[in-house]
Length: 315
Length: 203
Image 1 (cartoon, rainbow over the protein chains, first blue to last red):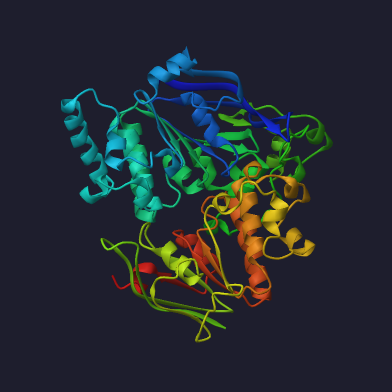
Image 2: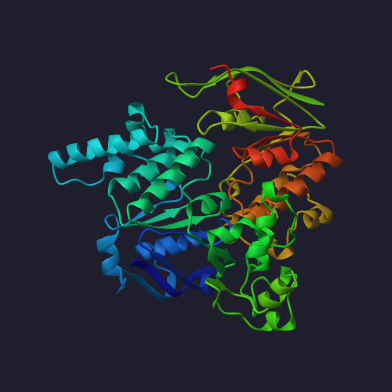
């Protein structure tokens, strides 16, 4: 199994002007390390608004000008610089964007899916492919001529998904492909993502829906307050005892089918000196408040916690 | 109190009808779940019941009487995307207190941090913003809450926190909830009854 995507110690922050000339640096992603192989689906799971999408934007080179990026991204062993990103995106690496706002409001959806064409002949070929893919998602011919504002949330999501699949990419970055879809469409999306994997493609699935991650992914990375706190095999997410980080355990227990268990606490807004979960953590020690744990390997998983061994032995 | 939508018929344009003779009723002491496919018109019905859309046929009543549109509207809608319902040029304190002055008690119950109040909407996450949009809808004059996929965008931990706080408040203050979601497992946790949208819409 070859490596497709490799991200090492990626950090992204934004410089913003607040009130006149005061500059403010806000860190969104800190020290993110993750990799995706061929025929593999890796999910990044974190709450919405936590900055996961920026990872996708950074891989494709579409971050805004005021973003500061450190760290390294590699595609098939080659360092991805801006030029290579621009060459690969849309062909080898495709994005399923998060929201309808990524569609051109003044263009019929079928034309957006087809994209730029050299001549009539290419357009006709792509049109057939577009109809095929649209039909697979239950978008009938009347949808082709609609404008984005006429689509319901779920229909728009299907349009975005089909648009990414038309180009037949090697690496697919799916940024929240499922919220707002009904059960049947979610199942279809899941099947499609799995199908890509069977064809040797790699998928980086960015989502906040744990169910979708559980049903599709081989490995799941838990994103908390800008940090990846745990990466573990999907089998271990069935039971809170098999995952390592206390937040991951809380997450599993809070699912409706696992008892809808309440855990208090919110993610910190600003950079903290110690562990990002310190404030809410049941197994914290003094060290956690002062020093930041790094992401370390343990038994095939990656974990960012000083105390997980003691805590898990006790359980 | 009973919130009732009677034989609602609506379409955005002549090509496609969205609602036909749809009827639904919620009592103050109830949490009613509503499930349906995307694009089926759930959100449209929500907007009609909470007074956002007025040019429909049929009627929405509170204890049998038509709801006056001049005063505070007793049916409050909470949207799926809180970031789209807030003025981006207002700080969160102004956003929160637009309709009423939210008590410190309630802020604490919903886990609202004081440091959030001086931020702009774009500086907070979806889960944080959703707490604001729920709290500002809980004006003492609110009699019903229509929750349209309010936790769809949130992580599971935040989902529990938000629903717990909202349900506890509504039970204590006799506010009825219409909870719209595509997640049956979620609705089964707290709903008194779950309706399928297809079955109430006669299309």
